[in-house]
Image (cartoon, rainbow, N blue to C red; front, side, top):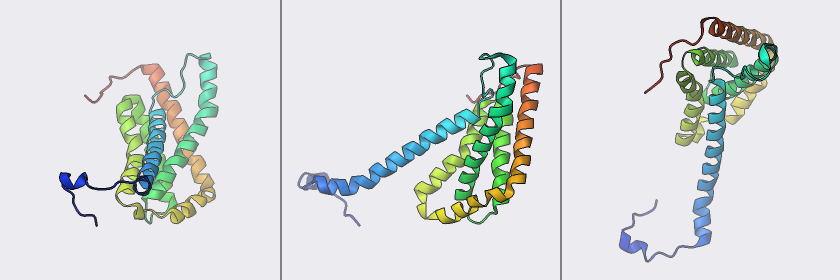
Length: 192
């Protein structure tokens, strides 16, 4: 435990680069890891919370339909894997089935709310990743990397469930997109 210093004692201390390195190395590592994680989370949640994931004006209607048939399922699956990973690190003892259900439910809800308010969608999309960061900063011992990795390795045994979930979210997106095209832009409610 360090003793408190007053300002007059501070000027009499001998600081050294080797000692500073010892104190600052873990700080630098934490800052770099947290910054990388924050940038990743920001890009991830900003992307999945957009109403229009693909701009319509690039190649016409046919190209847009192909993007939603080919690229959108890949994006949903990747986002599902990322959210499931976040959920496994946050969970102490939930089954992988429950974690997958939670991850896909959150993803589907983010997509629904994106058509109503992108701000709401962004808030939902970032809540789990930021909760994970908060827990890491407050109690790094909370996590069991070994248990999380073990849970994630069982994902392949639930491929049928994942395909049904993926089909649901892709169908939901088509329905939302179709309703958006037919009925236009609903009145937006943005946070002030």
